[in-house]
Length: 273
Image 1 (cartoon, rainbow, N blue to C red):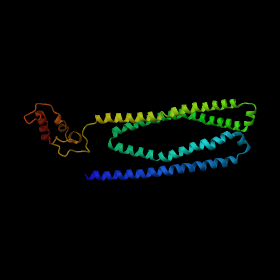
Image 2 (image 1 turned 180 degrees about the vertical axis):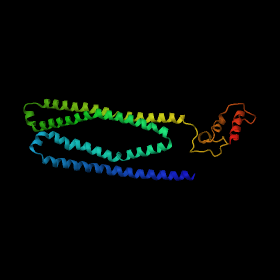
Image 3 (image 1 turned 90 degrees about the horizontal axis):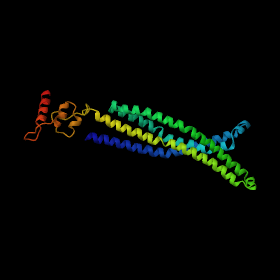
Image 4 (image 1 turned 135 degrees about the vertical axis):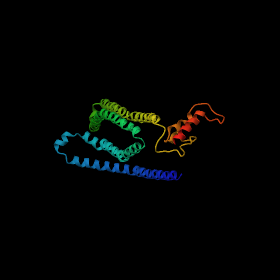
């Protein structure tokens, strides 16, 4: 009972520590990511001021606007996610593997089999998604360029009654962004069912392998090896398998209600001891 209180208090301390660090991460990560985005945006803008004429011809105004807005926001969100998960997830993985291998080397090999499969599947998903989002970001440049041309030449557009033409041109580019973005998001959503499938596959395999393991372990010992009438007898006794099977021996029952063959099993076990 003392061990229960000891380890229970230790678990409570760890849970409180995790809660405190989680609250700190939730407060610090957004502030750090916003500061990082502001610094990055300022550096990009200052670098644009140093462009030579060759650089100005290479980078369009729409492209620079996209770099200063959409791209910086994406990098800022990625930085915030990394601050929350890049340290916690590897630490949890390493310690979980250590504890699982201490419990059972054979069953823990399931993780070493599943991890490469999951890694290869994620690699192919990333490989499929990357060109899609690259195309989306290039289309963003075209969208910004269309908006810029329309705003700058709004008087000419109205003078020649070209409003519907500009609307159709803007709608066509927006439709391209919609289709590409939808395709990319559909591919990304494969992560969730893939990971869930691997998790439940591990649970099923571990349950199956655990069921095939012998019922006795050398870590847990029965208090009285000659007494089978115990709630944990069949699970914890490692000294004599005959005693584990003794309550399940079939045979005629005597007047006291006990199995005769079961008594014979106990007798053989007592003689061995």
